[in-house]
Image (tube, rainbow, N blue to C red; front, side):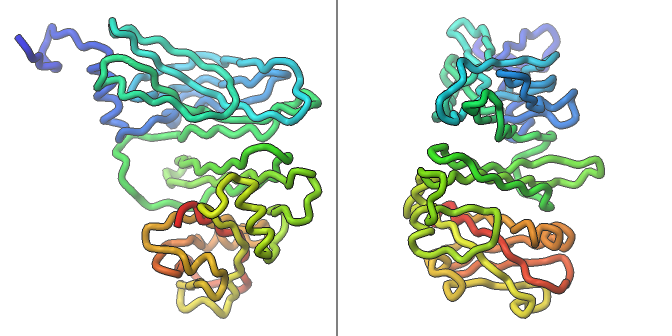
Length: 317
């Protein structure tokens, strides 16, 4: 017989059968299951990074970390060095599944279509960190999303935590958006951005996000070079004065920055508020709600006084 009814009593369900259904039930997402144990939080322990207990979906394969698993870095580096925390599933030709976690320098993940081919390797990044010359581990970020059932469709989100850091010169830029659900059932988006200093560490043309500043053309060029994006990405600061709001909408255009004039309705952007504006952004739910040809529309939940300042990152034009 060339078929089998998987819900029939006495029918053997293989790991591919279960994994494929799990992936479907999770909306095709990889992630850490919300509310299970410590949700694979990351903790520095000496020269090791500890992945706490939790349940991970990797291409539908469930992996339960039953107790803290610690991965160690080698000798102390001369310069700050980035590491990627990788979880890997390998499906053999005989359908046996092997799992491992390891550290490596950042590189592209291997994600084979293992259910279609019947074998292969599938990797996800759990997080990242920096190993410093003094032996400390910093910039620890859990990058794998915490997920909670359902499909991959859109929904209503609120801004959660916003964190920015200036990284050492020579490191790669980091940007992450993490979705989580708080104790009240709200869906929150947490934003993290790490931008490296100029190569000298004191480069006057480098861009730092510890204060609002107008970027010169040279600084915009430096920002693109620092994060390896060049003309594919634009980074600039923006101010939305109180007078710009009409009702609960405000629009910025190429008059505010020339890069906005290159936007289309298919462009992708991120808005990161300054520390001074973070309270208003969160309390009044200020978001960049729409991107159109040559314009970005911001909306707010209700009116307030004071300017909104922050940084626009155009990820793609």
